[in-house]
Amino acid sequence: MKKNILKSLVLPAISLLLITGCGEKEDYFETAKNNMQELKSYSMDINIEMGMDVGGITVNLPINLNTDVDVDNRMSKMTISSELMGNNISSTTYVDGTDENHIIQYSSNDGTTWQMIEVQNDDNQLNNLVNPDNIKQIESDDENYYVYEATLVKDQMSGIINKNLTDNDMVGSIDITDNIVFKYYINKKTKYVEKIVANLTDIMDVTDEESGQKVKLTKLNFEIKFSNFNEIKNIVIPDAVKKSSTELEDGTIKTMKCHLSKTESGALFDLSYFADYKGSYVTNIRSNEKIASDNTSTLETYKQMVEQNYEPFDEVEYYKYSVKIDGDTLISTTDIDYSKIDIDKVLQIDPSSSALIKNGKININTLKKAYESIGATCDME
Image 1: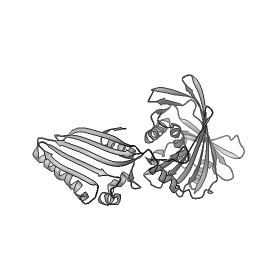
Image 2: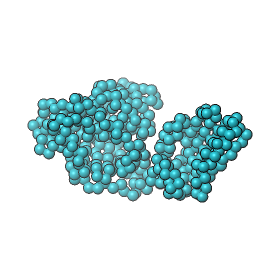
Image 3: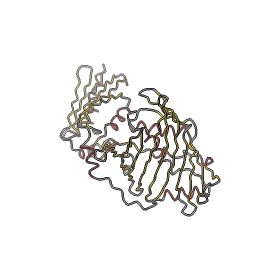
Image 4: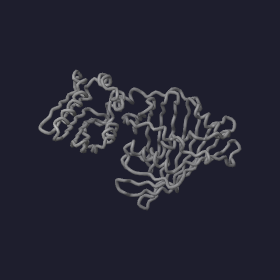
């Protein structure tokens, strides 16, 4: 698979720890949920026991994920370590959630070179995953804790995990075959959740879409521990991390090509877009849009509309465009150099561009989703 599929198993689980929709029950689970939601910071240690059957060979992959969460500032620092066939693997990720619409992740496997990705923040999709009737207190196996079981709906959980795959450019799919039961341990004195355990061994199927092979999970157990309640100091992403993520990425310029053909109101639209990018960021966008029609007035109307859209950029350097009618075809082209253009001017002229431009840059994956949302097909080098 293109990237570590483990993030799609782990990250949704992290998001679901503070479950909403507990109803009006006056119980310890409700109290603990409210206490956890009021935390300003905390640490979370996740241990995963994972076993896979790959081609008849059983591979065990123990994983530890330690996260410090700065709730007040919507920042976190995550360290993942694992061992595969005697080799230790580790990575560090800073997560910036200060933008309510997007989450920015800075990840590194060596602590020197960092990669930045931007994904849409869909926290609202986590609501109502747990039916209040499926939360119940069970007999505690530890006198220091109240213990509750919460059942998560399998279909919604599958949707969240596979969306995480897509957002992180991973190739594969994960199917949840049964509801998931999490067991919560609530400290009787503090009324905080201190431990959560779950066994997903027999309820998850993983498919590698590149090979079409299914990976049988022989074991998948979670144990999640919380600590350092309100003790984490402000988490700040070092400037060196941000600089490395933009300047030390692969310097090769690649091109994404997108195309859309459609007929609308008697006119044939042939739209082509070319986006050059280096690392994760767009450096140049070129477009070639053609509208063919045997109705002269239709072409003139479209020409006026296109010109009105482009005219505000006449005085913006590095923003080039042309609009002309050639026979029965309107041809509109643009050439925008985003490595040199004044981004502030662009945002001032067209505030809607802020949906694409974050921190003065356009992420290539964000642009790809924008083109695909209008029906275009995109190919990336």
